[in-house]
Image (cartoon, rainbow, N blue to C red; front, top):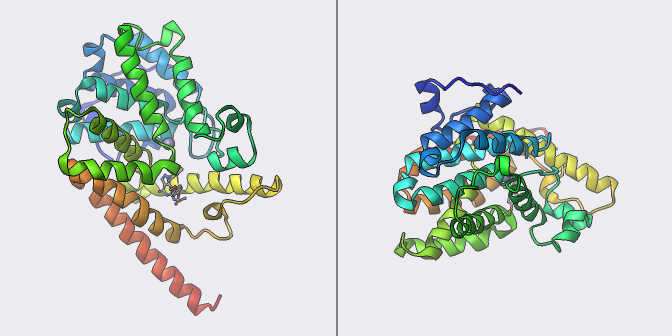
Length: 326
Ligand SMILES: COc1ccc(NC(=O)[C@H](C)Nc2nc3c(cnn3-c3ccccc3C)c(=O)[nH]2)cc1
Ligand SMILES: [Zn+2]
């Protein structure tokens, strides 16, 4: 994996700030370099004097610790980091939250699915896997991703935080743990309702408010594929369903309960996306849009377009099914 020395052109750098950016147009080495570009463009390298070689070593270690699974692979972590970068620029998060909070958000995105096995928490718990036993069924995957993240940082040559004092490192560690654990979708309603409670009187000096905002931001970035153009978003949905179907096949062959929305015989892509976008994605994005109106144009309008697209697809598909009398 040759590390490319080239810096990217201005048009690549401006494309990097948009949801239309397609990670699958780039080689792995370029993706790693694009992540380095985000750190330097956000001023983190200078502000926190992160040695460039340490950053590269860390990014390469992260790259090696994502698995070749259909969805939760290194490209997914890049997509999540890139969406966080786009929101950071568009909503001017550096001036609202400061560099340190934004560093925590970007690093959390990059680490948030480290060593994902391609089988979700429901499988881990039902199959009583090593992770379920180790974490007592409490967000086993998210606890694992976060633990791997800090084990990588234990190696001095890739510890991007090695120049921080202990107090700041502890602040960063607490923030990353909070953000990564917040990506467990089982906690979706808990986190979203708490956030919606504080939005009307949101106070950027209130630690609890900032913590909730950071959890919402990483959640938004994590499930934001449908904010991207259809030709970028659809392959991700196919990869996700590939992963879910592999899990339901494993569940069937291991005599485990089969998660309903993962069953290939039951899932219609448009139908499940209409429900997901209408009931999960849009309410989440609109809650964030209440506080950060700058992201409405960037990611909420595109998601509404995607919802319309899937509604029409679903309607025409169900009409076709009726006429075929299935
Ligand atoms: C509340 O917990 C939930 C809610 C919904 C889902 N997933 C779905 O409804 C289906 C499979 N659709 C879906 N799920 C998606 C998308 C993006 N991320 N994402 C996803 C991936 C892994 C785990 C959870 C989710 C939501 C997407 O565009 N669509 C999974 C968990
Ligand atoms: Zn993820």
